[in-house]
Length: 282
Image (cartoon, rainbow, N blue to C red):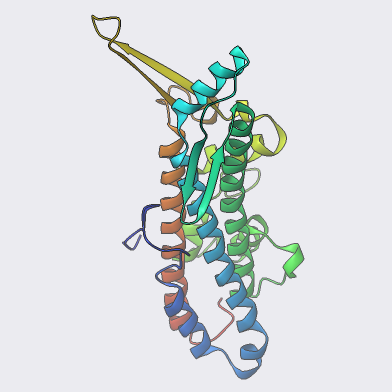
């Protein structure tokens, strides 16, 4: 894959615009005929702007997940058992988004909000990519009847005997290339765990996604000890015998991975547009 600099959640960008967005749009406009300039190009532009929006949402949710304080979760839980209210709030904030968490119930609600929105934004991004592929390759589906899954199946029928860089990249985000075929050995490592998180936050309890693990460290002296809490993803989300995965590490991995996917895809699409010299792509 091409190598592009990836921005972390600590970047200064308020809205995350892919580095290859403008050059792809320029090449598309260059080859579009007058009719396509009026109809096809505006649809493509909407999809590309939506990709930027979804990436930005994923960045914000990943950053908020990383900014919550797991130690406060344990303290809020302890106070709830005692029937006491916390003396102070636990803040989570990122680039103007500020959440002041008040108690254990508020904490659980916002954790669910952050995790569910993060997973949803990434899969929504993939579906927007499906709209983009449908438009560029004229796969024939209406806007309401396409998705990443459908667009890939349509592209697969056309390109499976002659795969190119775009097809090969998209295939890395499929658990199975053919619905009834074997598992895809090249699927990115975080894709299936993220898919399971999306399903569990939609249909099950947040307790089926992650748990709070507290590590107590004590010295030889009773009054010198520390207690650290971390959110760990449910081991059932990963292959057997996988090491524990911290929630905050995982969301950063997914955000940077999805960002890299978009950058690579835009580069490959740009090259395909330049090579074809016209739209739609074949």
